[in-house]
Image 1 (cartoon, rainbow, N blue to C red):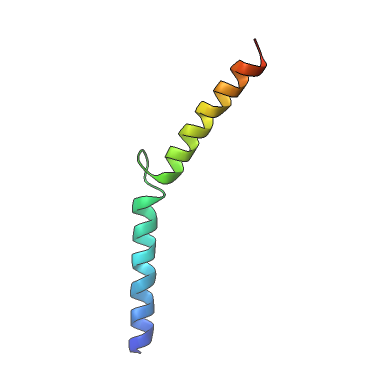
Image 2: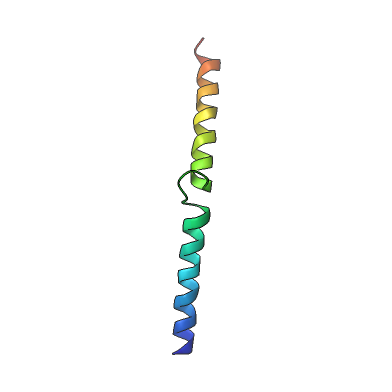
Length: 50
């Protein structure tokens, strides 16, 4: 029973960390990657299409 409780608590911590670090709206890793990817696409398009 104790092992199950510890496992559930660890899963909750992982979910909270994921939401706080990766999936955060404006400062999360996902948003930063998307922002930099969009900027890179814009730069590439300006190089290819004069």
